[in-house]
Amino acid sequence: MKQVGFFQSIRLKFIIIITLLLLFPIQVIGAYFSQQLETKLKENFEESITNNVDILNIQLEQAFSKERTEDGQTLEEEVQSILSDFNADNITELLVINSNMRVIGATEDTDQSKVGKRLPLPEIQRTLMLGGAEPDTKVNQQGHRIMVRTYPIYQEKNNQDKENVEQQDVVVGVIYIKASLEGVYGQLQDINRIFANGTFLGVSISVLLGIVIARTITKPITEMRKHAKIMGAGDFSQKVNVYGQDEIGQLAVSFNELNDKLKISQATTEGERRKLSSVLSNMTEGVMATDHTGAIILMNEPASRLLGKEIEDVQGESLLNVLSINDRLDNITDLHDKESIIIDFSEGDQQLLLKASFTVVQYEMEEMNGYITVLSDVTEQEKIERERREFVANVSHELRTPLTTMKSYLETLTEGAWQDKEIAPRFLDVTQNETERMIRLVNDLLQLSKMDNKDYKLHKEKVNFIGFFRTVAERFEINQDDHIHFEHHLPDKEVIVWIDKDKMTQVLDNIISNAIKYSPEGGTITFHLEVKKQQQKLHISISDEGVGIPKEKLEKIFERFYRVDRARSRNLGGTGLGLAISREMIDAHGGEIWADSKEGEGTKVTFTLPLLKQPQGDEE
Image 1 (cartoon, one colour):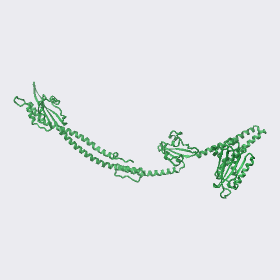
Image 2 (cartoon, helix red, strand yellow):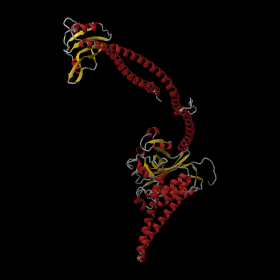
Image 3 (cartoon, helix red, strand yellow):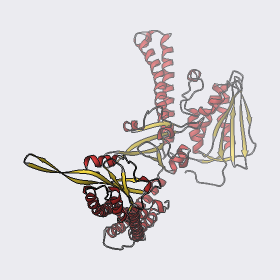
Image 4 (cartoon, helix red, strand yellow):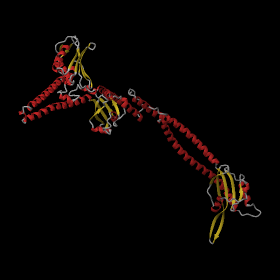
């Protein structure tokens, strides 16, 4: 699990939240306080200026209202005298202007060069016309903020109209002042600095408190995270500490309860997994499991052996691709309609047929979760089934041919041909031959049926095979006259074997009969016996000079009803079971049988028998 950095941790988030919760209201309060303080300080400053000017205004109104004589003090002199006694620390410039907007007086701190000059400023004009103007804040050339204010100077004037006397104040002058606001803003700046320092101190303390509080909250969570990592590794032996009864404490208690339940569940799951693993490992059938998309997630050893692929090679691969059934199924969901499929995995001469059975795995809500595929090797079953079908077809064919012939001849005889002395004997002779052929076929089938029976036993006895073989071969030599020649390559000494004489006679009859049937006129049949002392076996071979057998068909001549040349074999009266019976009998004696041949050069059939090692009873 990746380590959580400080900048991604919940601790930092707690600290930021606590800081913001404290800083936001402080900033709102500070902004509101600063705004209100600025307004209040400016109002107090303006009120202080106004109070000082009000006294001056009274004196100037009196001066403007006084009647002047030629030898008396002029208005300008009296105004200047009044201004010389006026003192206001915050006023940087004070001018007295008459109705003609001419400066008639100025304080000592004011530029005296302005006295006597007209000052047609908008605020002065507005005051002369309207009798008053609102204060205005400006910035001078030095960058200092100043307050500009005009105050009207009134003079009383009496107008008499008939019986009514109306008194009207007339603006006869203006007091024009400039006052520096830097002192006000300096105080405001000092107060804001104090407030900022207090805010910084409060935020710092809140951050420290936030760290402490966040630690008390995140410590149990961090422990639960570490413990969850340990649980993920399969260790359920540890528990987290419970630090209180609050929500986090209750979470820790629930976490420990979850740990106990997971421990029990994991033990149960592990037990079931081991059972399943044991079942899968000991199954002879291959088993594969997939997810809902058809991707393989599990495969046991038998399945790996049948497919010739390791689980690492197929894990995550599509089941349809691994089984090579994409041409049969377009999508994995098509398996819903398939119970089983026979798949051919044969390569060259190596035949392999697998039967794949599919089962859908579902959740409790009947939602499809995946598929279970069971693979069975049905190569032998399919081979047996195919041989059974071929056997039935061959038996039916072999029986039908003579029966059809007999039926045709008998129908002809029944229709009156039995009275014909030339046709009737010939037809009866054919019918008898076909009957004997069917009898031979049935006897051979019965012989094979007995040998297929597990309870079948051979009646063995100790036999000198050289003398036994000569006796069997002489029967065929007497009947052949000079049409076929026989050559013997036999040992002079006795060779003792343990055999069933009747069954071995039947084997030799079948092999020698075939050699005679397929030998040309004047051909030679060679009998060869050789003792292999090292292998403790006797090799018997019978060779002819017939048409031979193609190489690709040699292995099949010992199968039931197999004929290299069906038409010729049937004309020669064979049932197609002779060599099959011979192989079964040789196998029962513990030997082997095979054939070597080249087309046009003849065929050699060889079989082996184990030599007698020690005396045994007459039967087994």
